[in-house]
Image (cartoon, rainbow, N blue to C red):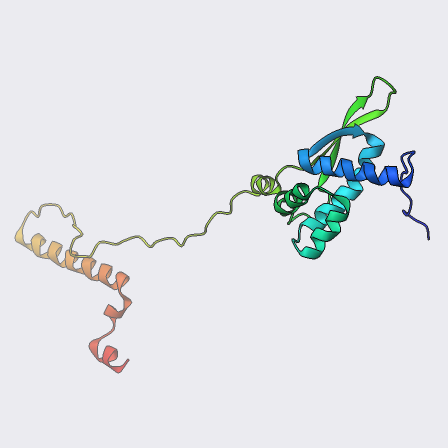
Length: 192
């Protein structure tokens, strides 16, 4: 099969075309955006994205492969230290083409070819911060002795005795609710 094996020769001989690729890719790395024709941008994009994929892993081998295309050492260094690490999480598509319109001289479609902005910032903006799950703290209960039981003033001594017994029963119920071990007789506690 012969699918997708061709490329745009841009009306130039091989040596001229390779020089054009090198110069435009170097300018793209240097300025991170260039203005050119749509046909050139589509061809330069292919070369630039292959170089960025190499630059994601900084090794001597990858630097030598990139240095075949980009002759300026400063730009090779920038590619491996700034541009490549920016796209470590991205599997491809490091550039974009923005259309500008027609050129006035020959009506060629003009575009801007640029690297995408910093991916780390975009990822943080897209994903909302995960909320930390914290265990709910149990409500602090006051000991039974501190709780006040409001009882109306007794009319006679008999009612005073009854209200004291009711207050003791209420306290005992509260203590049982807080500590279930209080219900058991001492003989059962010893057997455990």
